[in-house]
Structure formats: structure tokens, C-alpha cells
Amino acid sequence: AQSVTQLDSHVSVSEGTPVLLRCNYSSSYSPSLFWYVQHPNKGLQLLLKYTSAATLVKGINGFEAEFKKSETSFHLTKPSAHMSDAAEYFCVVSVLYGNKLVFGAGTILRVKS
Amino acid sequence: KAGVTQTPRYLIKTRGQQVTLSCSPISGHRSVSWYQQTPGQGLQFLFEYFSETQRNKGNFPGRFSGRQFSNSRSEMNVSTLELGDSALYLCASNPQTGYDGYTFGSGTRLTVV
Image 1: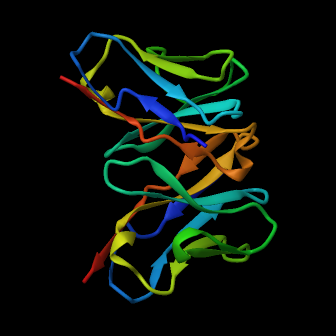
Image 2: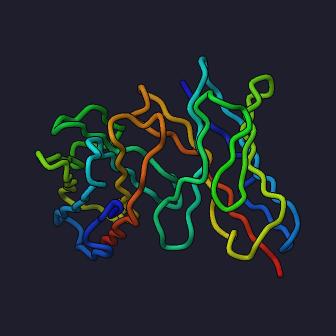
Image 3: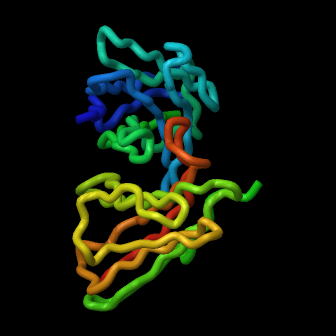
């Protein structure tokens, strides 16, 4: 069964420093992977998606992620954190021919001023 | 282009009652999915509808049901509410399959007392 594991439940960074949120996936074939962000009391917003076109994926708000098949990883990065990046981030894999999303447990990102 | 609209935003119900939540997908989107989000279980898939047919179903009891209308709008119903049904219920839509990701609504916050 396909799944994702987010390696950190909480990450704290200072404003202006790099962000790294780690995600490993388990899949028997090439997966479709996503990162979503959820701000407090809001729905989920798609940050970026990997669908086998390119291993380095650029998303919104300066985020990007690299698909590494050899490491079964799909880590999310941003060169410089902003206060507005404070939120919960979910690594997600789609299954059942794309019709169901399986979410990781989430990583809460805290940005310190 | 309007996003995914969920109504109501907040709801308080008593144990044993039933509740109906509504979701209007993005215009032209034919697939609608529902997810339950709780602090303990995270985000879990409830069901997915396409062209008025339930295409996939998660591992929830029969008290949770849904339907989709010819205009792609969807409703989910929970009967005989339990305290554990308190959650944020999120609706998501996409044109046909989720390989390119889903667009989520802001959710309905259900509190069962």
C-alpha cells in the first residue's frame, strides 16, 4: 500500500533562514506526490505536485521539492522563511488511480522573528 | 473562478442527531471527495463521487453517507451523531481524477455535544 511518512512533527526556524520539511514515501510504482499547506482554521492549499515530469518541482510562495527515487524522499524546501509560512504542512500521495489522497501526519512549521 | 464552497462553516449538534453538510465544487469539476480531519486521526478519506456515483469509499461506518447531484454538488450526511464525530470536514474537487491534485474548500467545523 502506498503511504507517506513525515519525519518531523514540528520544525522551528528563524525568519530568513532555510526551511526543510522531510517526507518519505512508500510506493510500488511511480507515485503522484503533493505538498499541501493548512493555515489555522483554513482549508488545504496545494503548494506543489510531482507527477513524474521533472524531479525538481517548484511551487507557490518560493517552495520547492525534489523527488529522489533512490531515497524514496520528497522533501520540501524554501531558501528563506517568512513569518507568513507558519502553518501545518502535509505530504500527500494519491492512490486508487488518483481518486484518493493519503496524507502524512503533518509537520507544524514555526517561524521565529 | 469561484473555489470549492462548503456550507455551513460551523455547526453544533447534539449526540444522536443527524447532520447534512454541503459542498459546491469548482465549476466543471466532476469529482468530489470528502475528508475528515481530527487531532488524533489526522486527515482521513471518507468517500469520492464522480458523475453522481460513489467511486471510492473509506473505512467509516455506515452512519456516514453521501451523494452527488447532476450539477456535481455533493452532500454528506452523518446520522446518529457521536462525540467522536466532532471534526473538520473538508470537501475537495478536481476535473476528473486526482493525479494533478485536488482543490479543497475551507471546511465545515462540526462539534457534537
